[in-house]
Amino acid sequence: MAAVTPVGRFAPTPSGRMHLGNVFAALIAWLSVRSRDGEMVLRMEDLDTQRTSADFADILRDDLRWLGLDYDRETPPQSQRSAVYDQYFELLRERGLLYPCYCTRSQLHSVNAPHLSDGTYVYTGTCRGLAAPPPNRIPAWRVMVTDKVWTVEDKVQGHYELNLATHCGDMVVRRADGCYVYQLAVTVDDGEAGVTEVVRGMDLLSSAPRQMYLQELFGFPHPEYGHVPMLLAPDGRRLSKRDRDLDLGELRKHVSRETLTGTLAYAAGLIDQNVPISPQELAKEFAWSKLKGESIFLDATQLY
Ligand code: GLU
Picture (cartoon, rainbow, N blue to C red):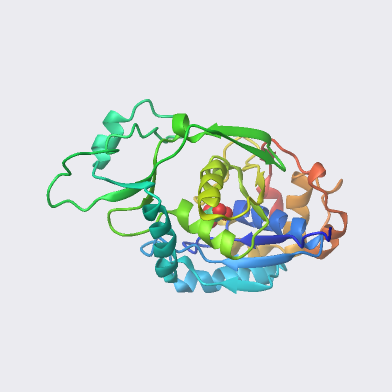
């Protein structure tokens, strides 16, 4: 059988400058695909139109160019795809898998205890089979989940499993304001773009089983997953968007892309010495097995 060409993706949210953590995830996504002559797709995840902008999308494209992380095509941004998402929503509705949910935010938080360690709750199905919907209220829509353990053989995190019935409950796919949620949009977009591997931050690991369930319902094959560790400061603090000096707007003023790439690659275990290197050079030696699976400590003060 002919080997399938890997298709990876960058899926940034254009709500600000790229941060070191985003750069790291993008670098690994690119290396994995380019080291096997695969294809890279870019998609702007701008479902939240309040927080995102076309200007930030332009800056993100420029940052990727500066980093040397190229891509073969860009698919339309999520904000322009609601008519497509409507079709997938209808597919679920026709199959009787959706129901309206009228729960308010405070009901959700009081009824659906216990909250899980990641701050999410398990929806207990209050509105499933509701006989009399409250008048004059526009509902959100939930898809029913099944009692099944989903397993992810993650390229970095190894074996991970989650039962959506016990750890998530029926999932919102469309909010009361008509906006589709991330899980639905990302599943449709990755599926339609033919993405074969999803590489992103570790904080999205628990999204993988949610997306696998929707992939199955929509008839898309499951991609491979690689959830890369979060970057931590030497004191163990997570590097976040609040560290303004670590976004690309600042970093680009002070360091070359080779210095930045070398620092990240060394911290992640991809090279033995902290030396400047281009993504192209790094791709020649890339192997998932070299990448550290636990947290990656990065002394960003060394960059300046
Ligand atoms: N848009 C998300 C972010 O910027 C990434 C979602 C994904 O990779 O699935 O964090």
